[in-house]
Length: 171
Figure 1: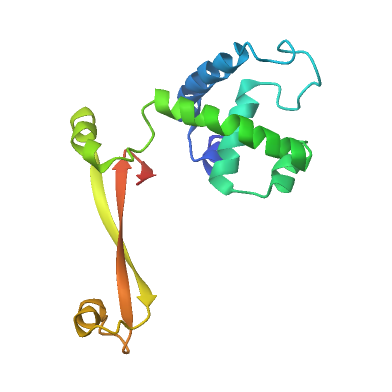
Figure 2 (figure 1 turned 90 degrees about the horizontal axis):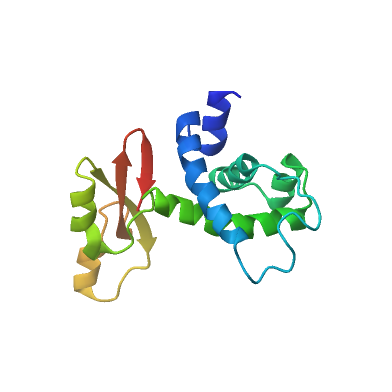
């Protein structure tokens, strides 16, 4: 296909896509071993998402672009209900695949040292934003939250971004 189109739709270049595909396929195969299946794999209706590459592309486009399920279904020749079913079925698999590749962001701040030890080349950038709040009644709180701009009071929020290679992983 076209590498730039893949990059635009998924955020991954062809090499990154194929690396993730291996882990995604492993996660998919684990779901097939489920003893609680109603039917054997391959029985029932034939899916429009036949290939594992189609399944990964489907869920990556969904999370990259967030189209409505009607649009997502239209692009992949599915109904809205089928698109919804696939989103819910493939989301945990993508999460598992990213876990296999150790691409999931760490959610526990107490684990930061461990993450930095495993990945010494990580760089962090702190970004901030100001959010307007009602003027506090307490004089001390007024001083702490005063922005200095047109008599407004704000609450500052910080976001930490971790850059890894050319891609960004937000925390």
